[in-house]
Amino acid sequence: MLVAQRRPLSTAMNWCLRRPSLVLGGFIVGVLVLAAAFAPWLAPADPYQQNLMLSLMPPSAEHPLGTDAYGRDVLSRILYGARLSLLEISLGVGVALIFGVPLGLVAGMSGGNIDGAIMWVMDIIFAFPGIILAILIVSILGPSLFNMLMAIALFSLPVYARLTRNLTLGLKRMEYVQAAQALGASRLRVMFDHILLNALGPIIVQATLTAGTVVLTAASLSFLGLGAQPPIPEWGAMMSDGRNYLGVALWVSFFPGLAVTITVLGFNILGDGLRDLLDPRR
Amino acid sequence: MRNYFLRKLMMLPLILLGVSFIVFMSVRALPGDPARLMAGPEATQDAVDDMRVRLGLDRPLMVQYAAFLKGAATGDFGTSIRSQRPVSQELSRRYKATMELATVAYFFATIIGVPAGMIAAICKGRAPDHVVMVFAILGASVANFWLALVMMDYFSVQKGWLPLLGSGSAAHFVMPAIVLGLLPMALIARMTRSSMIETLDQDYIRTARAKGLGAFQVYQRHALRNALIPIVTIIGLNFGAVIGSTVVTETVFNWPGIGRLLVDAVRYRDYPIIQGVTLLAVVSVVLVNFFAEFLISVLDPRVRFN
Image (cartoon, rainbow over all chains, first blue to last red; front, side):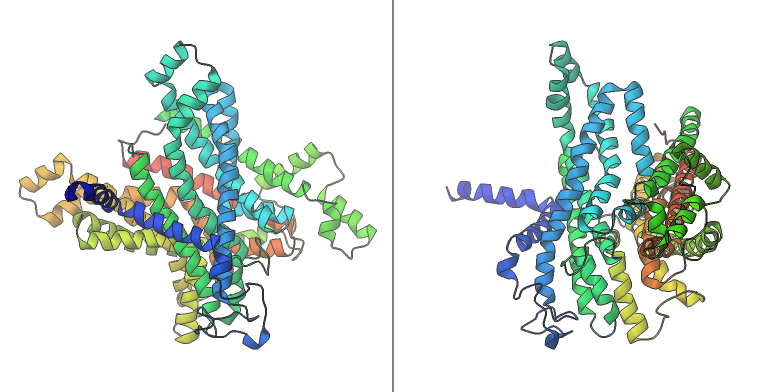
């Protein structure tokens, strides 16, 4: 009886142990989400509260990660920064998914000239190194968090369009799809029920891997002054603040940068784990 | 195979045409009057009109685009608003600095990434393999500007071993090249490992071993050619990512390449420079990608692009 009761737990443990990257990646991303959700309760101080008396204080019990040049608590700013990373991911990845996946579906289903035209435009966007296209767009629209995220979404668009198109081309030839068509399923129904649902796994894997890139690119652009503007507690922008205090107060830029690196690492590991789980073809 | 490259070769001008159109239109999409923007906020009406004629903004759009294309094809991107020198002159000097840095970075990436990947493959599943793979995923995830700041703090400010900023000596290359080379290094190690594991599994390797060839000879003779493929693949297909990360690396280290030129140009709203750098970056990435694919198909006859 005892054995039977313990079995579900040990099965779950086994399942997890055989997928260490899924567990580790999921843990890191989970911590990020919790930090973002509970930032107001976890943060020891107001992330915007300046106090020049406390400028550039090294890590202490009161300020576990020190303070920046304006005397703001670095830990509190990093915790609130987690909210910005989640916003960056949802907008940067979300917008690219919303436009990229349907474009790929239509291209794959239609073939011919429509396919050629869509993929031509996607190849043109894809030819730009992502960050350079983003800088071109931001230089026109002006530096801001929103403009930067739209630029990031634009350069990730071809990745989803191309992936979805190639998956569609493969699935279109599957017998069950042809059977559904022969039974009179409408074009839209085939597209969504039979093709999109089966393409979802690889798309989710790609979105997870891209989430890391989005956080990294957003931090890079904000670091260059082309994204989130001060005093927003964005990790890249915080590092840019700390740049002038090398050798004096490395913690101002060290901890935000560590947060970026761990976040990117988390999404990369989670993506690897999800790929093994959802996309066994590769 | 020949059809694939022929089609690809025919697509090249079409892609570049589209890219040049986006770059051309970007300045026209500026909110407000581009001539006034570029002349500066304190410019007189005369100066603004002058700028409009100089930029050709008084002519029809398609005529402007044709002139822009003709200029770009002959390497003429106009005049920098800030320095008043031809954009092409600035570009060629800065491009050389970027390429020098990228070459050193790729050199680092190759001499460390390839042996690391080989060791991991030979010791598959054992400790050295795990160490290499952990470093590979770390290397692919680390925020490059964070690594740059940490290294600058330690090696330059605290220890004084390496110059903090700028270029000019061999020592200046060390930190920027490591920062820039880390991602290709991680990718090369990963890819060398997987292609090596695949190679070691082949029948001809087993035959060579059975004939009595030593392990080292087998690796050297049969694995070397296979090691070239990951290098070409990563250098060729991730060249765009490296060109992209020069923007941050060069800005942090004050390296006089096209990446820093671009960031400075955005700050000064120097649109001819922005257009020139963007076009140059895209053209080099597209060409490098194309030649890499071609080279891979020569090195590895099994590869079938489609």
